[in-house]
Image 1 (cartoon, rainbow, N blue to C red):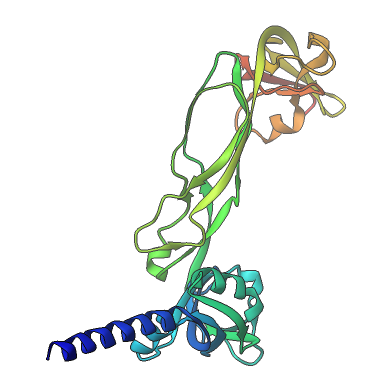
Image 2 (cartoon, rainbow, N blue to C red; image 1 turned 45 degrees about the vertical axis):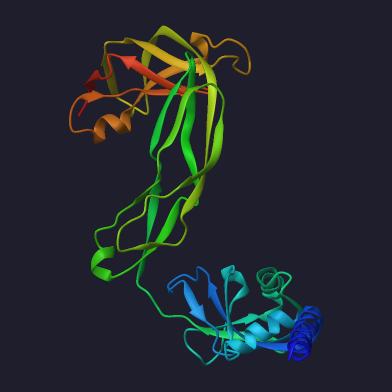
Length: 314
């Protein structure tokens, strides 16, 4: 009896060793799979599943194949992200788009890893039905939280790319949306131009076509100067004269710390009242315009408005 027990134990061990060896070997096999894509086709829901099953042919270990067969060989679900430019409308089939399988092969291989080495995919293209969605395009507004070192300032507005996005959802919800804000763009003691990426603030119940945008803003060192300039008039018709009071105002401006062409002097600047602006105004007070070929970042005058008195024939 003892010998029989020993024989049975030895036989069991041998079977286990044989099974371990067999299942560690690599075998050729086929695997059915289903492909689900996420993309950003304008006017459509972001997710769709291929209408066709795909058969992958390749190599895998015996253990992996045994596990797959143990699940009843249900198709493996692959979820991949794909750029919208790779989808082509299927003629005669509304809301159906085709996608070449060649665009998916690398990502399918990455998801399989070492478990299944793909040799061949038995399909050239897949088709997807995308559900239509209502949408509206709205501007993106930057939420800036920053301060600058002394004598540094932003030059122009922050540039967002893209500067507008599509928002998807129910028509009633879309009617209340006029803009999308970025998450805070926060900097402290800025003394150089900035750029980067920032997320968008989510809107409950709605979907944005992208969750982030890039931003860029030029920052430069400036010098501030103040000078007194005369206010002149242009465009007055013959026989009419426009008197400006006061005839001189104080101009304060900010320019590059090292302006092209050297230091800016009074002869480089002119404050002008256009006769057309005066006749189109609702009052006799007008804001003069600054005319210059030099680089000026910002400017202000004191007083801000000048009184215009028209003389001559009516």
